[in-house]
Length: 241
Length: 399
Image (tube, rainbow over all chains, first blue to last red; front, top):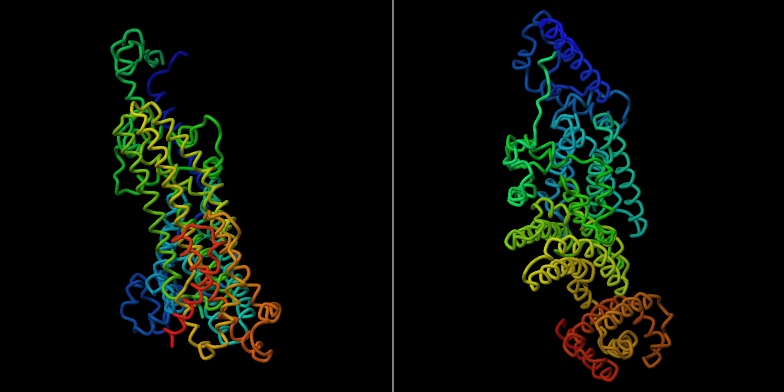
């Protein structure tokens, strides 16, 4: 075709580029949900504010927490962690809570599980259980990232760690069962408790991880999560007594 | 727009270019360029491997995330395809060239190995649990070490054996030289059949376990042999070719047998012996019990001296020991012992003892088999006396 003067061509190219960019962005927004979040605790000043503060000190709000008593800090963090525990135990539609990730909860749960499951005759050491739970969730996270998931690393570790809570509760339950009756009933009860914990953990983590995967690789991402919780459930079943 | 024309690359003019096969000489010289490989595809900018990664291969640092991401570039379908075809051999199909090239993935080998590690550990513990009928779930030093041992075994197998094959093919300048990651990928997928096999190994019968091994080895071994053979068959030294094929098959078999032996067949003796002292307060009544029990348990199968038959005998022992747990069912066997009141107490006391006896006899069966290798029919009496002597020895030592 006959060409126009060069400026027309330049404008066409610009428009074309803009169109392409717009298309790509809309496509990206369609396929992946928005999973951005901050580290928990660094929130807008209107949300978490201790009662003693002057409400007019808005621009310096994020520095106010440096002056507050340590007890306030600990209490606030504990409240957040407790809220996340409750959120895991009752999975509902509000996903914002787990998007503000923190690593206290997973650490606490991993240490608790390791203390419960370690020792015993022929059982794993504390280090072994801790490595399996903590670095296992890291490996599953790495797998998700490598396969192209859009969730961030720390958010994923946070979710996987928090969803271990039902299994920690199951481990505590199994320890109490050990003080009761005949072996076969004991085994059945432990099996039921552990199976319930396993199902709960899967359900809770699926609720959050569902939106972040590319379509064709969904099973590839879900399988390691299932394997991870299965291994931890087996550890709970075998060694919590 | 007239000046925007596509430039013609006239192949006739560029007869001496290295990228055309126009001249036969250059074709032959640069044929390796098409099959040029590196240890890790994508590290050198080849034209044929990993189409999307050639230009970016050089730019991806080993320490960057994107470098590893290119090896996880698979979809669910691809993984399923590779998985199924790794143990379904098809005639004249090469697993690597058909399914793994151009881009090997690391997702499959990684998660198959991890699943295999935990499935062997879990099912091994389950098998031990069933063997001892639940007497104590965790035994000394053996339980969690299954996980660590299995991980060492599987990891070294999947990493080292492909390396040896790669070195062999490279050294012999074979016709097809796969890259290291392709071989590793193939080996990772070939281990996938051992996952259901390890779950089925829980079933206690020896003949079943051996048949599982044979079936799985035939299936996955055929696939492995196919691609190894097609790479090495043009070797000038036939011994190397056959040796490579047999070596890979042998290593595969060795892995399976190692799993079976150490994880599913080993009977824990120390726990068994430790329960003996509580029963040794009645040695006099126990010896005819021992004699009769061992004669009930010991009859080895009739004539053949193959190992299978003897381990069948072990299976029979195990099965019979479980049967003997029923309290009074076998009382006719013990008719030559003392009074009935004594019998019943002895029965109740010797029940746990019988399991240990079964273990001891099974182990001594194995030992006697290893030592003699002869049919046990003729030597039954000798064996029985040997066993009674052994049991007497252990009881006396315990006291």
